[in-house]
Length: 353
Image 1 (cartoon, one colour):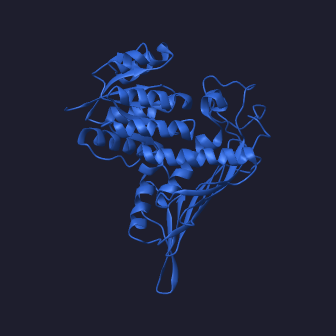
Image 2: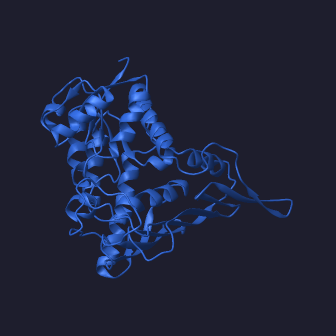
Image 3: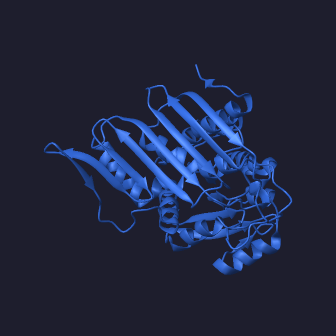
């Protein structure tokens, strides 16, 4: 197989990052696209020179020419589409989160482990330049044992509306949409420790604040100011089996002076800030030293990270390599996300045996 025939399912805004990246990869033939809106799918096909527009999921699944798929649909369809694609002999890159629930994630894992196909979860921040650089420092013991991390992603006003604000389609609000990224990147850099205890809180006070003027934010094509069933904000303390802990807070809407993104890790030999830009703290000659790498992307760069993620997926598919974001990691992150929601719902700590 000289080139990988790829299909993209779901042509919302995130799909453009996949499509652009596949288009640039000389080992890929952008073969097909599907969306429940055939008109929108045809528009994307025309834009990217895609050969085929599928009329249904069943037509896509039964086409033997499709080698691999990117799943960019609503969260509530991730599990069924991913498992169906695997069962029909296709490699799978599924956008985060892996599923709506931990139980669904375990079902996907069973199917993926029986398959000989590549399965990659869309943890795109793992493929960003600042992450890959920091991981090399961590792997070389610059930070020592990482025992604490903090992750913040706060929007003042940023509920996208549409399916993002519909719990039946999304599974939740900023925690499952934004929190999944910052939780994953901390967990990944901390060495993927198993979760032991979770205390979580969610808040539903402000809604989508559609009445706010003079401050723009991203809105989905089907934005509806009257509909919102997801949390405004969530926070959690996650403790792992090795004793390390992660403190996280995330919001769609909050009475804050500015948006905030921060990811910090602390170890026995040093510390690091991944966001808002990469910095590493260490000691040399009895002196604390701040290291500020000279690189093109000190912060997360969407287009470059997606391109690297897609290229890694294609390489795994064509050369039989193991993905850097395998299904097992998606399962553990879903366990954490569900644990935070469950702790908030019950008002108590969740403990795992």
